[in-house]
Amino acid sequence: MIAILIFGLWAHTGSMPPLVVVESESMMHDEEGEVGAIDAGDLILVHSTPFDQIITFAEASNPNSSSYGYEQHGMFGDVIIFKKNGGEETPIIHRAILEVQPFSFVSSTNNSTNPCPNGGIYDAEWLNMDGQFGVCVMTWKVPGTGIADVANISIEFDGKQHARYDCKFGVMAHEGLTQHLSIREWTPTHAGFLTLGDNNHCSVDQRRVISSGGSLDGPVRQSWMIGTAGGEIPWLGTVKLMVSGPPSPGTYYVPSSSFVFLFLVIGMVFIAPVVYEKLAIKIISNSPEFEEAKIYNEEE
Image (cartoon, rainbow, N blue to C red; front, side, top):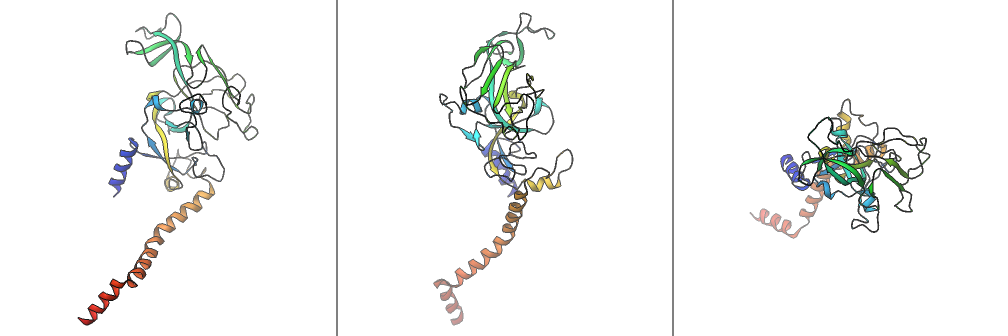
């Protein structure tokens, strides 16, 4: 049964393992937990989504985009699961806010010490015109916005030119942090996604210094991707966190309500067969067929 369940999940998601357990509070929408948002202790299905089909917040919140209105887990855009900087640390599950792509570029040289002698930013994983990896990016673009052919990225999600992304200012305030998501003069180091936890108050993952004029780096590359977050199975992942050792934070971030619902689910698993058996016996014993069988047995 376990093998069939795992195979079914793999067939549905295209990923192995098909489920991940959320450990932190970075995607929570309510401190008491909320079904539909991603809370610590939830199980999340991991879908193997093609990189070019991932929809960002910028695209899904743009009325002129074909992806307008697309939501996952309570907000615009896909939630992606990736390895931080491609390393072996615990994967991160955060929302894709925007994607930066090369707009104008030239092929790089084979010189590993100076792949872009004529200028530009070297991106080892972007394909050139010949289908070979490695380009020198001169300017960038951001799909879902009017930003194109620029040397650096500046965008205000303030509800005017672009959709508003609130930072919940005052809950976790930092110097230079506005009440909306603001990216100023960011020069990407390569193409990829800029990501942010829904509960991280505009402190994007790629920000080195959270202050006015702070720089950003490390957009999520295709090679870092694990998948996109699909359906949510609330509370059940708490069991795994209960027995997890370091470096897992255990159940520290799990909402108290999740424990209540978890124990209710466990209780139902044990009680349901008993209740079902009694109901089944009662229904069967009151059926005409049962009475006929009883009379037949007595006659025999």
